[in-house]
Amino acid sequence: MHRSRPIYALATLIIIAAGLASRSAAASHIPPFLATYAGDTLWALTVFLVLGFTFPRAPTAAIAAAAIAISFSVEFSQLYQAPWINQLRQSLPGKLLLGAGFLKSDLLCYVTGITLGSLA
Image (cartoon, rainbow, N blue to C red; front, top):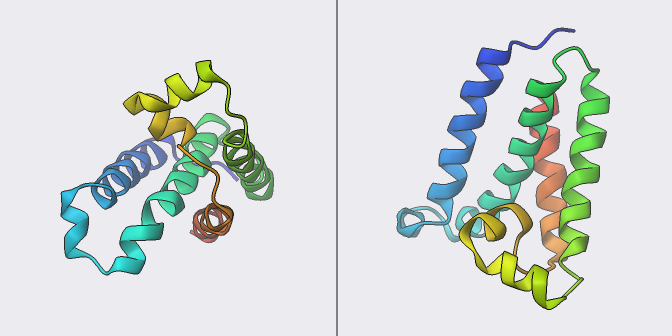
């Protein structure tokens, strides 16, 4: 399999925009369930797409496994609460990339987003 980098790049930009919108004031116009879980699901899908872009010839299962490993690692890293990383998490890039606090429900969102990416 060979993934199209332009398609993956475009899809990544669209998913990032949708994820940011899901966490903005615009989210008040979507159902509460989607507003709560869309951002985390789309974040993991973005990880999957970035890996697919970076490794266009890798098997989809390998990309999915790596995306789950990265997503879960980031989520479990939120259990670590040192002052230096908490300060980093308070910045906008830190919050978007590292999250703010551990939630078990995020793990299901990650699996869902990566599964959707794998199926597409």
